[in-house]
Length: 203
Length: 203
Image 1 (cartoon, each protein chain N blue to C red):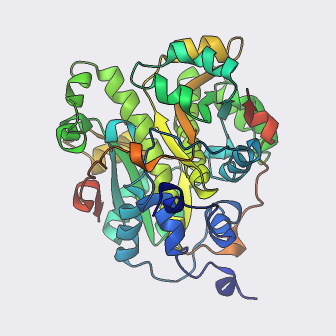
Image 2 (image 1 turned 120 degrees about the horizontal axis):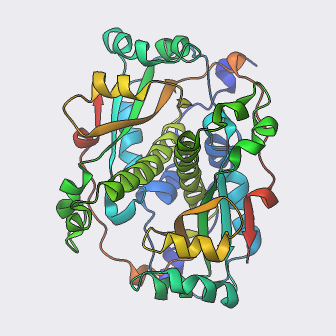
């Protein structure tokens, strides 16, 4: 077995590209179909393999499912986002842990990566925000990959969510994802995207 | 055709999950196999469909390919990252445009979203960094999905890259991705990941 033969030979199946990218939509309404906890766990188990800087892996997630937990989340939602969040089978609070350097001796044993961050709160915050956001995107695509639909949102009160769900920790909320089986009847028209030439240049 | 029937019925193929998540690695060495520009463009065309807040789509990319462009990038790289970056068939400078609000009337015509950002530089920076990072992760997984390997990096001098490639704009570099067909012989041992229970909670 040569190295060339071991390499993935080409693109994933067209159905996967459609499910992950071209055919996937941000959902606002949800079909009455149960989402098992095991499917959420499976998506996390895929997403965690996505790369982060020095394997720092700062993402932390609370899946808000029970009526009691939804009631704690509701006051932090913007008016536009509250009803669909209450209605969603699950809502992921995607956060990042500013204490992530404490895990680096385990996650990145090759060098003393924890020492890079000592006394440098700006670097901690930037690293946690960048890599926690990358991991949030891995999670979103992993949720789609296991067959679920997503409705990501930035419209909520971060301070309220942090006080309610992350009190006494250094975890900070980043964005939210409503999760379930989307109702196509409640989709908004799809927004346009920038043209390739507006996004990228090859030098 | 009912809405239920139209919905994706389950997970993508196991081969796709392996190619995107469980089997993919951060590469440091590159096989002598050409990467056509068309494959980079294809990855951008998939990645652009990933969701962003108010469809703000702040990611901007420079694909550094030519020896001349690589020579401009080299002085900004950390010593550890320079040789593999020079050797990679392509290096993506993944940035975000702080002028993204100017595109909102086109991208999000439903409301006057541009006005949310007027005079609020902190919100502009936070929104660009979060959503530009999400889009960077979409790009990374799209590159893998079209059959390429990635080597993402944070170890470089942002100010130097911005001065060299984004002078006169409000685009800021975020992270870099070396791109090509990875040489498995040059992989490092895979780092561990946190356990599910350390990442997520279901309430």
